[in-house]
Length: 107
Image 1 (cartoon, one colour):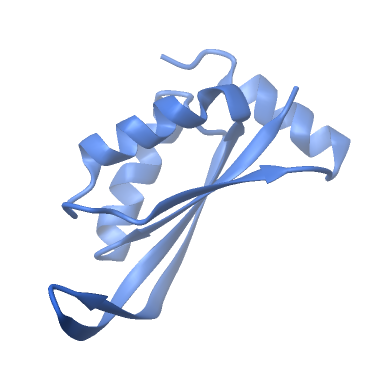
Image 2 (image 1 turned 90 degrees about the vertical axis):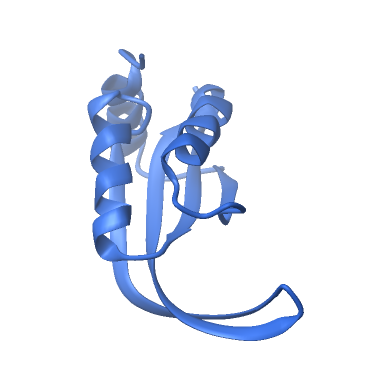
């Protein structure tokens, strides 16, 4: 079974935590890590922006990637949220098996 890591930025720790809890409760992801107070610098609407955001790292099965992305878009406060996915090529086999077991009941 293949797995992936999904990277998301959120407006706040609270927003990231809400998304994380929903995605884990729905078994769409096995685990979510939140890294609070990241500084993001980017162009938006023709101006240079600097914001404090929370980073959300999600571990799931590759076959659930599209469903997770759609669900994040439904939950997210941004009109164009940063959502990127990276394949997990290798890792601790026991941990990867755990990801699979935790997401088997995805709804």
